[in-house]
Image 1 (cartoon, rainbow, N blue to C red):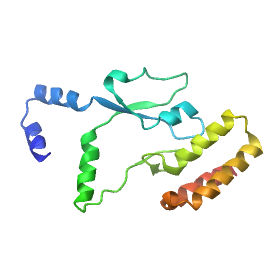
Image 2 (spheres, helix red, strand yellow):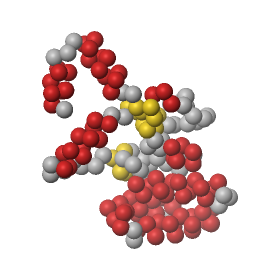
Image 3 (cartoon, rainbow, N blue to C red):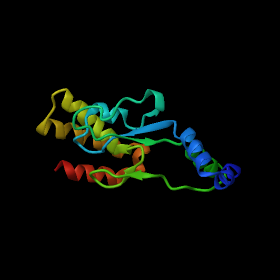
Length: 159
């Protein structure tokens, strides 16, 4: 990796552009993280596409999804650092309720459950009661222990 970095420093601008094009052959779909995001977009959030298989954007009217370059090298570099005892803090992304984990974490689960419930006809008090039950269960799940503040923010927005 270091040798590759050094070779990039000494490349001509044209060689560098060709190298960057090779690195950017994949894209990740990132959806907006709020209650206005449709179920289809939420389900596709985080999907990585080869450049040849990318659907035209926007995917539908009022779509707020974006495609961002996905670089496997960065993921591999993070894993290598962790295996060598170097802790790299997890990335976050913006949402209506504040910073959330890059993968959406518990807030994405909440939004998916909300969209599915609404699609099945739940609304008003029935929807809020259903969502409160989900949040209560998630509070006790080990995988969400570090996201209790996010769960509290979601609950506060349900009031």
